[in-house]
Length: 298
Length: 313
Image 1 (cartoon, rainbow over the protein chains, first blue to last red):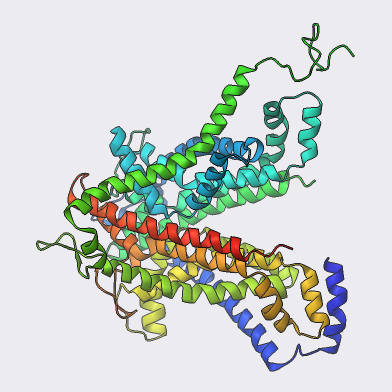
Image 2 (cartoon, each protein chain N blue to C red):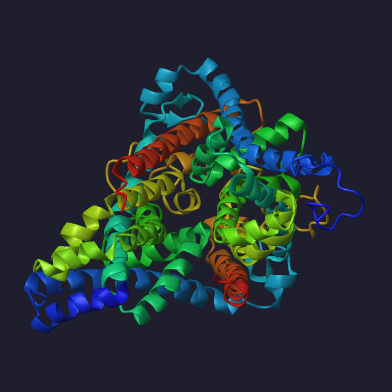
C-alpha cells in the first residue's frame, strides 16, 4: 500500500502541482501551529508542576502525614499508602472479573442471542459514563448493604467499576488478535473449548491483556472524582491497614491541597503531583516494556 | 484407531465423538464467565437504581418542573431554591469553551499525523499525545488554578479573570480532551483506503484538497464520533471544574465569571457534610441523575452517528 502511494504521489510532488500555493502552505502551517500548541501545553504543565514542587520533594513528603495547619512539614505518607491499598484492591477485584467477562464475550458469546447483544451495547455505554457517577453508585450500594463508605474496600469497588469496561475491551482486543489456527489446532487435538482458552488462547493474548490492564490501573490511580463521593477523608493521619480502614489517595490529597488558599499547600500539591506522575510513568513504562518484549506478532 | 479421543486410556465409551462426559466443572466455569459478562448489565441497572431512588425522594419534595426551569440554585440557604439552570449554564460554558479548544487542535493534530507527518515525527508525537491523555484530571485542575488563570490569562494575555472562572476551567478542559479527539480521528483518517487519495491526486488535486475534500469526508463518521465522545467527557469531567470554575452557582453570562457545573456541585457537596436521607444528599443524586441522562443521550447519539455514516470499504 505504502509503496503504491509513494509511486502515485512522487510525480505530483516533483511538479509541485499546487503544493506551494499560499492556501496549501497556510493549511500546513495551521496544522503545525495546532500540534505545537498541544505540545507547548504539555511541556508547560509538566514544567509548572516540577518547578513549583521540586523544593518540597523531600523526605518529609514521604514520611509525614498531612496537616491542616503547618504545611511546611506536612507530607503525603497516608495518601501514598492509601493509593497503594486502593489500587492493589482494585486490581484484585477488577482484573479477574474483567478478563472473565472479556473471555466470555470474545470466545463463547453467541452474538445472535439478545442478552449478548444487550451486554455489548451496555458496555459501550458504560465506558462513557462520567467517573463521578460510579462514585454515586458505590455510595448508594454501600448504603444498601450497610458498608461504611469511607473505607478502602468501597474506594476499590468504585474504581473497579470504573475501569472494568476498559479491561474488558482490551482483553477482547488481545484475544481477537490471536489467530484462529491456534484455537483450531487445540480443538483438533481434542481439547475442550475451555481447555483451549485456558491453555492456548489466553496465554497467547496475555501480553496484550497485561498492557491494557496496567494502563487501566494507571487510570484508576489518577482518578479522584468517584472517591470524592465516598466521603471527605482528607487529613488522614494514620497508615491504612486493611480493607475496612479509612483512607485518602494521592489525587484526593492533591485536590484538597490545591483548594487551600495558602501558597505552601499548593507547593505541597505540586510535589505530590510529581510523585503521582512518577508512579504513572513507572506503570506506563512497565506496560510498554511488556508490550515490546512479549507481544507476539503472527 | 480405537479411540477418537487421544490421551484417554481404557475402552472408548461410544462410537460418536459427540458423546462426552458431562464435565460439570467446565459448565460451572462457563456459568461464572457468563456471570462476569452479565455484571456489566447489573452495574447499569445498579447505576439507575442508585440514582433514581434518592432522586425520586428529592422530586417528591421539589417538583420536576421547578428543578428543571428554576434559575436560582441555593439548596443550602435559609430560603432554599432548587432551580438547576445555573448549574446547566456552568456546564454549557465550560463544555463549549473546551470544545472550541479541543476540536480545532485535535482535528488539526489528527490530520497532521495521518496525512502529513514524517514517520519519525509521528514516532515522537503519538507518544507525547498519549502522555497528555494519561495525565490525571486533578493535575489539569491544578494547572488551571495555578498557571492558566493567574499567569496565562491575567499576566500574559491581560484577560481580567478572578481565581475562578469558567474560561480557565474550559480552556484546560479543552487541553485535556485534545488527545481523545486527536487519536480517535486519526484512527478513522488512517482507515480511509489509500486508493481514494491516489484517485484524488491523480485528478490533479493537491494534498490539501485531497485531505479536505476526499479523506476528511470519507472519515466523517469516526471524526464525528470522536467529537461527541469529547463532548461527553467534557460534560462529565469533575476535578478541573471543581478546582478552577468556582463554587458560585449562578447563571453564567460571561466566560470570565466564576460558575458552578453539575459535576462541580456534586464534588463540592460530596466533600462537605451530606448524611444519607437528607434533602442535601438527595439533591446530589437528582443532579447526578440529570448528568447521567445527559451523557447517556450523548452516547446514544454517538453510537447512532457511527452507524448511520459508516462507509464500508
